[in-house]
Structures are given as C-alpha cells and as structure tokens.
Image (tube, rainbow, N blue to C red; front, top):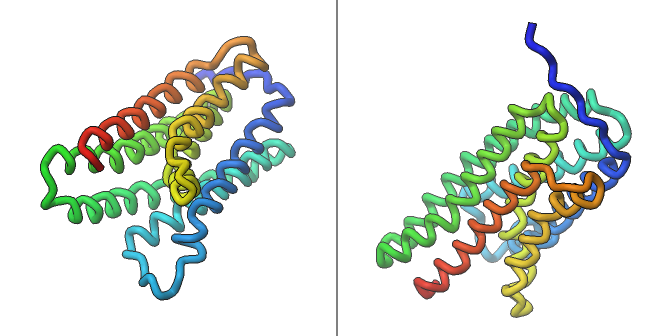
Length: 226
C-alpha cells in the first residue's frame, strides 16, 4: 500500500489568510471587469465567444476558489473537495478559451513587425501557461494541503493583472500594476515567514516566476513601443 502524505499542522491563521486573499482577488476581478464585461454597454457590441467564455469561466473560477477557501475555514472539507471538481472544469474552460482569445488577438497584430507580434504573444500566453501549470500541479497535490492551497492561491493571483490594469489605467496609475501584482504574488511567502518563520518553497519560487513574467512583459512591451 502507498503511504499517505503526513498532514501538516494547520495554524488557525490559515483559516483567515486564505479566505481573505481569495475574497480580495474575487473583489478586484469583479471591480476591474465591471465596466468592460459585467456591465458592458449595449452599444459596444457583443464579445467574441472565446472572450465571453473566458470571462465567465475566470469569474466562476475565482468565486469557486473563494467559496472553497471559506468552506475549509469553517470545517466543511468534504464540500470543498466536491466543489473542487467544478473548479477543475472551470480552470480547463478558462485555459482553452484563453488560448482562443490569444489567437484572436494575435490575428489583429499579424501585420505588425515580428518583434511586436512575439511580445504580444508572450504577454498573453505566458500568464496563461503559468495558470495551467499552477492549477495542474495544484490539483495533483490536492491530498497535500500545504502544497495544494499555495499553488491554487497563486493560480488565482494570475487573474489579477488584467483586472488591476483596467482599474488603474483610467486614472493614469498603470505604474501600480507591477507592484500590486508583486505584493499579491508574494503575500503567501510573507505570511509564511510571519506564521512559520520561513517561506514555503511553493509560496516563494512560483511567486518569483510570476513576478519575473510580469516584469518581462512590462519591459518587452515598452521596448517594442506597445
């Protein structure tokens, strides 16, 4: 028989931190996409099907993640696991529709110089790939809560930049996108240091990778004048 992973003692603070982070992500996503998605003006025209599916799946994913976090906090772990099936399906829809959205956007840039086309492709595809890896590994580690919750939180964090970009840009505060994303990505590592005395490898290494992707995106787009 295969030995079951040893459960890590869970500090009571975990039952506050993870639901709070999940709820904050859901609120930011809703606030950021309200003008262009949830309250989209009727005279703007309908969204393409991939974009519509992507938006709906992303919304339901962060909402499901928030509900699951609160279920664990109140001791309803069985409901958490059952709802996890829906979360996995939503992640798959988000990923596949995201590929469709990326391809649709790249068609618009096809006449641009190759260096600009590649920069835009990286901007859209790299975070999507990171999301896929985080969710895939997170679901594979669902029997090890210490790994699972950190990976799934970071997967939800990946959805923040498009939302914060829409919040900050109208107020000429686009420069806040990167520091806010870095804070969100690094929050779990900081929390680990405060509560456990050191960061968990899965709260720090993937966070560094996400921040690196965002820095690369910002610098690359600036370099090609986009």
